[in-house]
Image 1 (cartoon, rainbow, N blue to C red):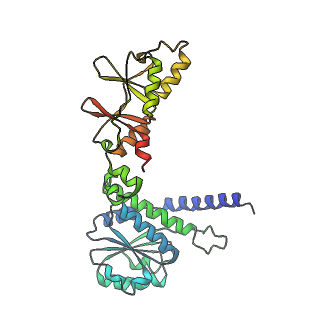
Image 2 (cartoon, rainbow, N blue to C red):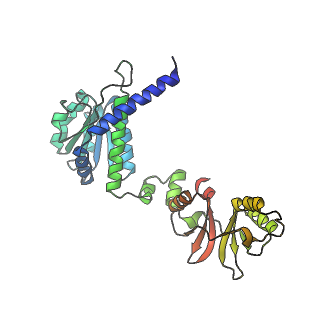
Image 3 (cartoon, rainbow, N blue to C red):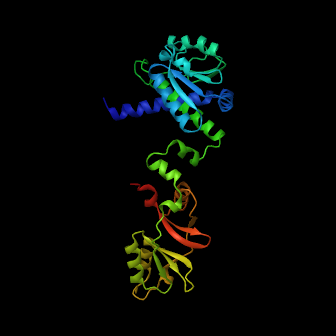
Length: 315
């Protein structure tokens, strides 16, 4: 067996099934998003087996992007976990076949509790689909499994639909990076999103003047280890920048570099950011302009320099 060829075939088969499913998506998604958005309680996702594992992931994605969500194993629900559900909640029941006994068994108790019911199923004509208020179709024609038995394409379809639901709700809530950071305070990601430019910038600013000689420019760039230096005029105002790239271009362009001054090869102006901006904003600015450093400003004064390494190289 050629595993590379077979793997590509599996990818293509699942992609094909996802495209077919995408073509079937209709107004039920708008209804689901608005129903969950307006929910005064929480979203409770329930599943069993491999589909339950996918449900757990969907619940985690929703909870981390602003939609209060928990996952309850359908089998455990019948042994006390239903106590976590209130009438203000919405239950999202996931079952590919729509006939799993564990899922069907919780329908009547959920109705007694009084919460609203949504099904995410691969069979829109199933017993489960007939018991709920709204059905989200995740049906696929064939599993990637050669026996058409092991949940493969069907779980992928459910996962992607859950991702889409999470993103739609995230955008419906106008969920921002700052909000995301509140739920992810640990690690580099949380620090990146929660920190402001002033928290990570260096105040040891590389600095030369317009009449600084080439060799002294190189010394300053190397000494401050930021791959750049700002260039100041006689009035001590920053007017330009010299980067490693400017130095390389100058060496290629000029035959005699010994007498070069900073003003001869600097780039006029420079990209800047306010010290109170979020690091996420700085990272976006760097990415948009394909640069690795920003001058940090307070009013019209340079108060620091922020490097890409200050953002991503957290200790």
